[in-house]
Image (cartoon, rainbow, N blue to C red; front, side):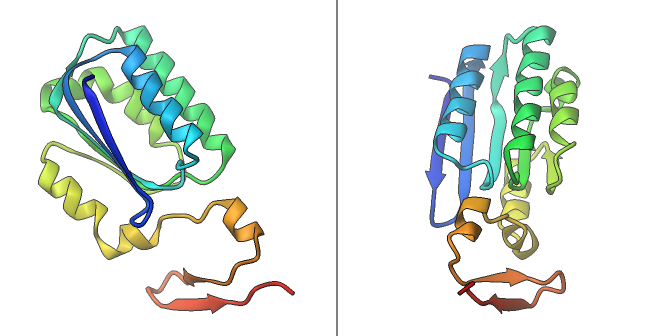
Amino acid sequence: MPLHWTIDSQKALFHVIAEGFVDKADADRMIDVMVASDILHYRKLFDGSAGDTRLSPMDVFTIGVRLRELHATGPMGPLAVVVPEDKYVLLSRVLGMLAVAKRPMRIFNDPAKAHAWMESAAIRASTPVPVSVVDEGASRESDDGTGHLEERPSPS
């Protein structure tokens, strides 16, 4: 299988590495896992630097539409995508669709820079808490936009 992923619930990180040729079925399987695991709010790091694809422009468009539809289901976590320069044009349509979500997103050619950005304090702090967790009434800390954390009391 050309896509390998790790779901780290402690870090709220979904890390995907592409190796070899990725087809539409591989991409669909990855999306299915994200949805079934309820991790759309996690930070996502997709490293395609060692991957390739035989996706047609229509396949890329279909994947982009599917991902865009997921934006309406709840908060989307930050996204870093690493692509080789020669694949940027092919993937630009789907990347543009992903950029519509209200979340930090950057495209890289260097996996180390993508990792550093994804682990930065600002990006870690911007990872949304899913509505289901907030609705449970658990007390939690949140970034007030200044980098300071404030305690939110539980509703009584």
